[in-house]
Image (cartoon, rainbow, N blue to C red; front, side, top):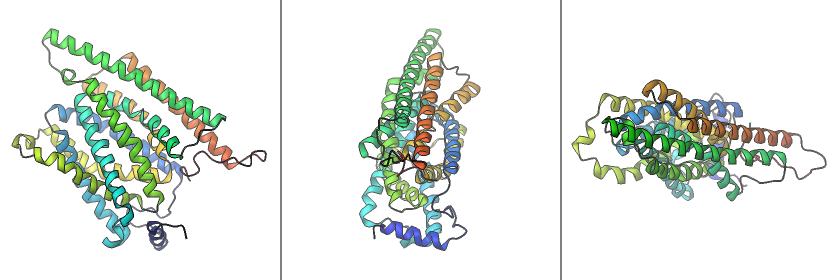
Length: 373
């Protein structure tokens, strides 16, 4: 019997829940289209929240405090939901041999994926944040090749996917350099005219360093490790609950010693809105990402990132009147086109896998262990 203990538990609970239990789906594998729709919702929601978070951190809200309070509420909500889905506290606990992996997942997801990302937003711009997120599919794909979950072959689907990833990276670099150039020119203009604005607080190079760590550990590393735990049989809500618990505990060691300053707790109306919206939205977004990763693949989860770029640019224009430069627009378009090639290659691979040629008995789907309907 090769089924892991969490997998056996999942089979038993799923068999009992003919109409579903809370956030747990009735079927263990929903159609891939549900995962894609969930990812569209997540990315567009993150686009709006990124703009709001930028306004809040500009008003003086400490990024660590925002992430800690928001994610503490998320952890509580997800633990309660997971307990309801699992049917008991004893069934909710991870298997002993997997508990350290959940700690690492929490550090990757909360500390690198959220705390570092918010520091990057505070030091840079929402558009720069969204553009950097477009490099996550490339990082995730490359890490997948190293882990063996993605396979390089000399065929058309692989060529489309590799070309798409390369184009996405090139577009992201172009947009990042364009954003840095524009921020430098705006800051110089404001200082010359004696003006003050959000751009004076931007440090693209510092922000890019935080975003790079976010992409590497909080994106690629996080979703591959999460996929590994999901493949062992854990429910998405169970994985979300425990990585938030461990991640919040780890982040608290860094943030709480600095939270004794009374000034950190003086929240403006923008701060309160950002905090409140995050507390309401984050449990849903965290679950949807795990839901999509369970039914698709880490690369597919990351492939929807360009939607955040488009949403952020539109919101930045209407909310702050920030007009993106041609480099940012062109770079974002190249990223979107590159990821379009990647998706076309993935779909082609799936089609060939579903109808393998008789002359190619060794044909196997590139996403066989990842994308499932």
